[in-house]
Length: 553
Image (cartoon, rainbow, N blue to C red):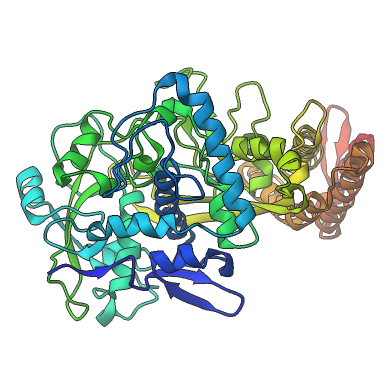
């Protein structure tokens, strides 16, 4: 007997103005404007769930406009709402225009139309968490037994990343008591199931078929990037890249995982590059997962899992929610690959990667989409230029072990600025100027602070491998100041004056930092060391530091 339907049950955690609450899928879409943001157990979990919600929107609005009317470029079955024929290439331009209009109409309405709920009702039977025929994001017992001899066991303490305990090593600082680590409520199981399909690792042994490489989770390898609006409706809309024709996406029928006619066919897609549309990518699996449909919350949680093949990473520009790295050499020479965020760097230090500034830098699809929206904002009265926009970055950190790639922590960061500034992408525009300011900041730190530290470490006969710690400590000190400066930038500001304003802040912060280091100087520091006929001590390297600092504009 199927049970726990995700359309009705309250399992998605969201925050409103007062508290964190749980809502169903239908409640989420019906009241998205009332909620501030996703507020799940981890930011990586929120990212995974948001992509499933976006897959629903991409599927619906690839077929229907804001009035709930099917586009005329292909056939849509009235009973299932399935798109049954593909669009002709000569109709793409007209189709794109209608997709833009659909997005505009929904944005202006400030709520999602009824066609979303109508679509979900058509597919109600595919949204049961527990089912012996079509369980959500899972396979049946028969499928995993046939494909992977039943798979390997995976427990509640493994799937819950707040515990993330292996069978061989205890998590000593778990937020859960030992007696409860193996148990999960149904709403938790739903959230962690989706997260597991996106962020897994490769430590498990059972595999499906014979593939060259197996998936650790598609979004595990992403340097996730998305736009945040003033409420959840705006956030979903800003990331709904509805006119995304990368990899001929618009020519393809959108096929989220629940729309395949059999589970076997969904699994087959990973063996013949069938993940060729954005809805399929947003609902991609890393594992065949089987949960006993008779499982009860009072039972210890256990599921069976088996690896699925990896989705091609190189030049897979169908993915709009990642930063990219261009490989100049090596195995992936001349290819772009998703780039995970650096756990030790604030996202503003990679502003060029985020905004696509540079000769071989590729702009993330969601940023490209925002630029397109800005181009039509004035004529369509979208009022995007009145909005502050927040860029949010999210990545999962792995253990660095190539045999497991076990998830151990997450990266989450935000950067807020005015939309009209982020959209000023022309030559000499604000995006170029802010990127130049970031580059100049790094140069000042490298050529002024680092040189002082090299001298200091030489005088004290210290291991120079400790210098990066001091550099990162200084970056931490200026982090909030740079964020506040960036948020203060407006489109009408004089660029030279704002750049000078920041460099004055930077120089003051750097002098104060070095003054602190000098204030702790010892007699040995003043005695210094001799070399090349002169003495190098704390006073001489401090004077050299001041000289270099004052040479910076």
